[in-house]
Amino acid sequence: MNITVLDAATLGEDVTFEKWEALGNLTVYKYTYASEVVPRLKDSDIAIINKVKMTDEVIKSLPKLKLICVTATGYDNISLSACKERGVALCNVKGYSTHSVAQVTMSLVLSLMTHLDEYCDSVKNGEYQNSGIENRLTPVFHELYGKTFGIVGLGNIGRQVARIAEAFGCNVLCFKKTPDRNYCCVDLETLLRNSDIVTLHLPLNDQTEKIIGEKELSLMKPNAILVNVSRGAVTDEKAVAEALKNHTIGGFATDVYSVEPMENISPLNEIKDFENVLLTPHMAWGAYESRIRCINEIAENIAAYIKNERRNRIV
Image 1: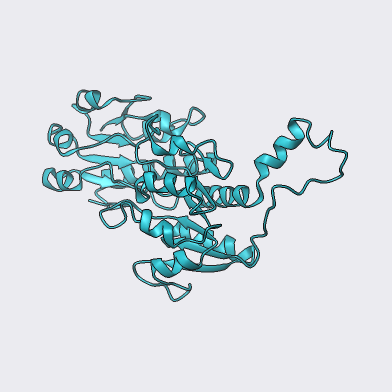
Image 2 (image 1 turned 180 degrees about the horizontal axis):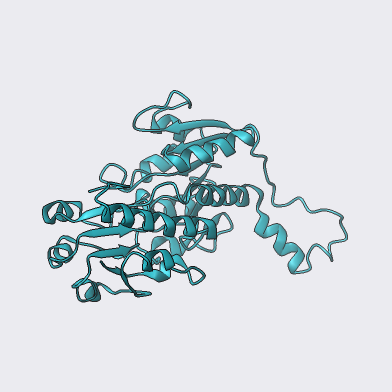
């Protein structure tokens, strides 16, 4: 089997691919531009990708391609219809980054709630040392305990965030297409109106694209914070920027963007220096342990395919 990795750099420089090498003739590219996808995959049986777009045109131009392995849970960059039409199998990886993303989600929530950056800066710049006061209590921060924590999307990550929020003493509300009797599930409007914190954990599809827009933001409490660790396009980024400028909501953090890397023309660039805004470079999934799990899972997916077994199959 000829196995080609198109964007290995997205997995980091500190990992190796011995388990993939054991399964076939492995070729690894750190980055691949759109114009290079077909030439690099023309003799490949298996493609391993993360963010490279596998469009209808690309897939139909690769008659030898048998399997696409995406090093992620989401696969909105791959044409499912073309895979089905051409008989190309597609596998993703599930559950590998649950703890990493949940950890970063809570880190963003806690940073916004406690203004840690500002407090740390007061020590780094000498303001605290020269204040003559033993403690500093501005800007005002609040406890998570007793707050209402709204979780939009209740997959593996959403449930893990719910468990952590409950451990902090939060009242957890959830929005899920199919209600879960283990959680207090409500409609989206009710969740937005009542939550002090809202975190997003959704796949990107026709139903979830821009699910948080101007109308939804207007329903939120003026001091509520919004955190997106799912897909950038589940929010209307222009509406989010306007909501922050107009003080419609109290804070915003995101690790994901509608176009990645974030474009210089993104409306989020207009608010990136706001004290109540945290923007991170799509790193929430990428704890070292998560990336090792991902690599191992891809190896298991390929091994299963070679043995004509179904494992993590989407198509």
